[in-house]
Length: 209
Image (cartoon, rainbow, N blue to C red; front, top):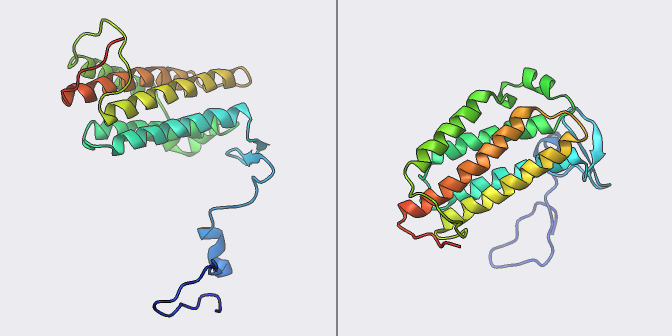
């Protein structure tokens, strides 16, 4: 069967025959570039580094954190603090952009989306206080779990702590904006109280340790 030819109804083929894209579309549609096949990747600005570089590890962990929050947000009830979680995901993209370039200030100047100011930390602290005011006082440790929403927010919290450790390790090799560490530290606290709130609103009792 020729490439691109459709099979007649009721027939099957055991051979996968990819349709070849026109050259004008290949650069737009293709996801793979093959440039990382040797274990290197490009930072913003084009600098090539090994994929286990501390800079790559740091923004990779922030990317994983963003995905973990996305999974938690997608779980029912989806309206649970959805605006807040979306804003946090946008902040994490800005942090990833900052960590993924040798010149964070240059990226900040060229792309306003990559800017992260103290006001965002202040807003996280306000959110923590607001959420905590709705919760019973915590006197002991609690086990992560309860509702799926809560468990996934706890999972995101642990990823956040790992991202924070990666950023601390990166700071031993190069300058990292202090606001990044402060933001991640506050975010882990916010994810903790959000996890508790998810159980509280679902009337699920937390398991004490």
